[in-house]
Amino acid sequence: MVVKNYYKILNLETSHVSIDEIRQAYRQAAKKYHPDLNVGDSLAEEKIKDINEAYKVLSVPASKRKYDRMWNSKFGKGPKAFDKSQKGAIFSIFLGNIDNENKEEKPKRNPVKGENIETEINVSIYDAFYGLDKQIALKDVDGNSKTYTVKIPKGIRNGEKIRLIGQGKPGENGGKSGDLLIKINIEDDNNFKLEGYDLYTDLLLTPWEAALGTRTTVKTIDDETNVYVPEGIQSGEKIRIPNKGYYASKDTRGDLVAEVKVVVPKHLSKEEKNIYQELSKISKFNPRA
Image 1: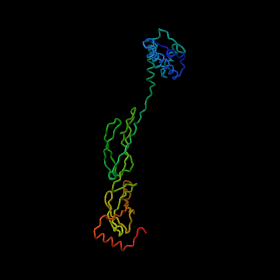
Image 2: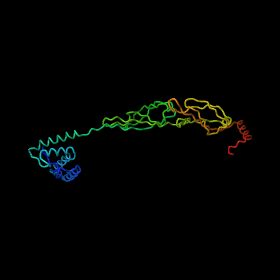
Image 3: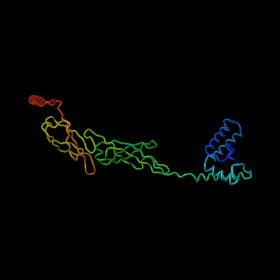
């Protein structure tokens, strides 16, 4: 096997050149002897092979240093022609050493944990209050659908995230997979609205209940409770019922806030209509005064 002066092949006068200079010399030489510009020229074909071989060795700092050390130890400073009797053995040793050095210097890659995946789901206010196991289907990194069972604890906070460990993107170089983070959005319904730890609901009253006052029942999220309505209460006023709201902790709850809405009947019987007409004659109340 013939040992070649790689610097001479790349038209470099000295071994004291940077990788950028080697790269530039390679591009110029490769362009000059490119097969497309030298069709049928067997000499050009051999030249381009030598150019690629020289660049492969000299463009890698580790193999360039090995080449220079070997050359200098055998033939003195600076690359020059070898004695023909030494060519085969020296070249074989050189390439073998370069391969070994490249293997030895290959950096170890540290384990990298995979990225977390974030998503969100909606749950009803009842499901959030009582807790449940909910199944959700998501697509994995390969586009395949995968079903997860998410355990939603009772009293979970609105916006709180549930972490499924190891269900995110896979890690690299032996690193652990990331996690799946699921944000919980609690949906209000027709009966209850959640604000902080308090639940809001409507308390519907007839005009006479609002005027005369009454005792009535209010439905809570887990039961019902009795409330006293003072006489003369107005629409929009609120009655606060302690410890009947959403979970504030394991053993405490917020309040239930009942907002009064006075409802007038759309259809009156003849007797009801007469009573309202009589009331309109004797009452001096004017809400617009």
